[in-house]
Length: 225
Image 1: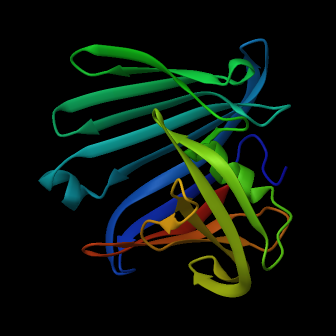
Image 2 (image 1 turned 45 degrees about the vertical axis):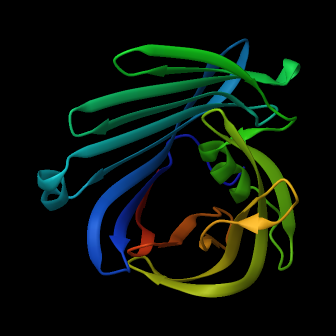
């Protein structure tokens, strides 16, 4: 794997690459025993700058336990704070029965089960799975990705290598474009690109997404571990 326990990636979040809106971290905790196996523990969180937090405080934390042998998610947790509202969501995957259980806690608790296709990942485990791809221009890969109890077929397409400039210098990187597919196989959604470094670490260097009010940009500014 191109990552190891103790890796910490720090990102700056901005609009159109100019207005800094917040920071985010993605880290790999130590492997640990989990649900009768051994799991990677991937954690990501993000919060706004002090200026934007004063206007509307938010905080998000995602954590996914991924089986170290199958690289399929065991459990995906998402916690959010938006103003005075608190919400937590836990999805437990049962790949052997092609099902998953979801629990959402707000002022109440809602639980349900839903079907998943073989090989279903969640958003965070999909990010790490992309890093392990054997990159080459023209490579495409389609995988089911669960976002809560919604499951989408997502196609990842690898484009040409480009040079990405950041605070960490200039680095060659592969441009990866994910598309959400409709039931008829058509692509939908806004333009989204991720650049993965062309080295042994396969670092996600930059993410750009077109939004109604401008371009959402996430840029790697620091690595530790």
